[in-house]
Length: 286
Image 1 (tube, rainbow, N blue to C red):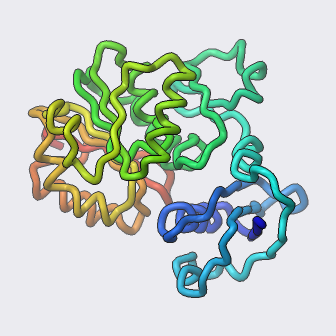
Image 2 (image 1 turned 90 degrees about the vertical axis):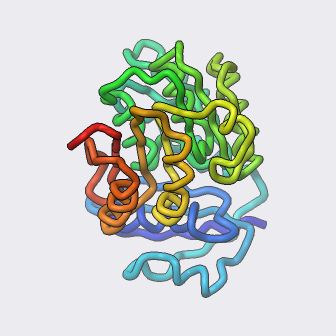
């Protein structure tokens, strides 16, 4: 039996709640869907699909002011795929992301097309962090030769990197085995089988150690792990190197930058949205 939990409110508040439901809760909800309200112009609607009743201590991770959700018990079906299929086409930087159900819609569009199927791995392009990273990759002032996507989720950023720099080596890892399986399937759909995928916690995996040092490292995770893993990330960085960091909130930006600055990296650009910044750092001077 699956529950659908629904909140309505401002987009920024619901985006923060969506991130908490997907990334901070353990276990996370099965899927989320954030859509504009059909009845209120200033409101958005967040649906969360889960077969677990969220414990009270988990509800405390949600942003203040969110309120209690409306709960509905749903019939048995693949609600994960259903939720993601309703999200539509994403256009971010030079990329166009779509599901197979939208293939005809984007057939004549310009841009680098990536087909991402409905699944449970984080990173379909709809969240501001993924879309922001895609835009940042498109504006990166370098030509990388060796790329690491740390915490790759559905593999979107690794695939985007392969498309932008077809001659570069791309290694992508995630702590979750299901995410790696989904990322491999997505890469196969897009004809990008040359990416090396592996299950890994941090940088301590055979592919990472064998392929290091990297001149581009992408980490779209959370502020805590970004800071905790900073010494390990810098240890596998080439000289020079660019690092793309995402998954943090605006109030966490300064502390993350400071950690990497103390390790020899300087902020090159801060893009993304006001709530979800994307940090580009490098060994070059500001």
